[in-house]
Image 1 (cartoon, one colour):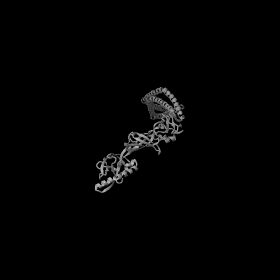
Image 2: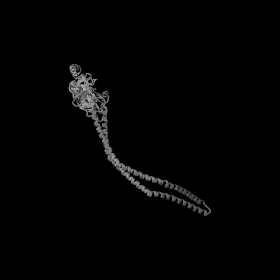
Image 3: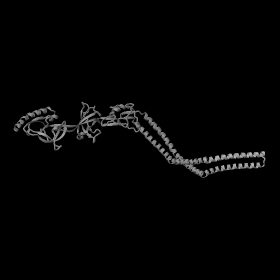
Amino acid sequence: MLQRAAILSFLLSPLLLVAVASAQDKASPGDKASDNVAADGKASHNGEAKAAKTLVVEAVPLKVTTDVEGTFVAREAAEVVLRPKEWKKFQIVEIVPHGSTVSKGEVLVRFESKELDEQIEDVELELRLSELAILKAEQELPRATEEIERQHKQAQRAFEEAKADYQRYREVERKMSLKSAEMRLKAIKQSVENAREELRQLEKMYEADDLTEETEEIILQRQRSDVEQAEFRLENAKHDHKVTVNIDIPRRDIARKESLDQSELALQRAKTALETDRARAKYELEQQRQSRLEAIERHANLVQDRSLLEVRSPADGVVYYGGAVEGKWDDTSKLIGSMRPFGDAPIDSVMMTIVKTRPLYVIGSVEEGARPSIKIGQAATIETAAEEGPKLSGKLKKISKIPQGDKKYRVELSVESKGIPDWVVPGLSAKAEITTYENSEALMVPKSAVKTDDQDPDAKYVMIASPEIDKPQKRAVKVGKSKDGKVEIVDGLKAGDKVLLKKDQ
């Protein structure tokens, strides 16, 4: 039985090889390995024939690439930035259009100068006035210091006098005022008593005569009037005494004490003025000097800013409005709309960029999964977004050390200038393929043909079919790169080996 099978296989082999060769001639070079499948008649170990698909391993070209989405960028570009020190309003009078070709030194933009000139004149007037104010303050400072010291001495003297007056009042004058009031009241009382006594004596004397003459009556009447007046003076004196004791002296006590307190407060204020006003006068003078220095600096800055009213090109090239960030001109559209006559130019940001359109390079990004396979120096094919655009050659020059915010790695590709059309300029989109691996004689098999050892997950193998052997043999292999559902076998197979496939392949 085995001999018959061997003879049959030997007779059918030439026919099978002719059929396979014909199929390979019709297939493309990259697809030969996948289509070179033959059906071998094999005998099973129990003697029953079974049909099995096999792949004849052949060396085919293998090229693995990584896609890059990027932008064409100029190697040489000069940014034009307005960096004024003081002036903030730059109204455009005249400006070159976006996309213009300019030469170094050519005027790019002119700005309105009237408001800036008026501001410079105002600052110059301020400087002249401040100079006079400082001169006056310098002359007034010694006089002001002398006046402060004089006022302090005057307040000190007034307080000492007030304190002595208050002490004299408490110890002498108050007591004398009370005593004087008492003595005035006592004297008037005595005067009343004297008048009354004199009237009594006259009446007694005239009553003894049993006859009152007209003259005597006049004398008595006069004495009675004196008594009445004395009694009124006594009443008035009692009132005055009460007012003096209960009102005038208490009020005088308060007034004298308040006068002393006010003198003391005035002295404290004079001391404060002596301690602070002299220093404040010096500081105010220093502040005036500092303000003048700032005005001088502001004037110098404005004069320097005036030189920015006419901006000239720093280099030969093409005018791009705005600035590029990783080759992308995000602000250009907005600036084209705003940077026109009577519009305002941006300050402290890129207003224009003068771009040399050659040489170019590409800035792009690759997915994080592709990072291990890319290396500096790898070749790249670069295209534009145009369907009929050129295919340009380049190399991978730079790779960012860490991923960006989008979890992609930034890359830089050189571009060979030869063959670049004039319409390919900085800012255009670029598509590139970096060749990360290339083998002109790669042995490729379907991924499904490669099995994993149950005992060792890292060990791979394939099943080899042979007409000389009844049962397929297990052969250990080492895999390489993968592409389009196939995997490269870098060790364990050679061209001409037949790899057993699944029945549906």
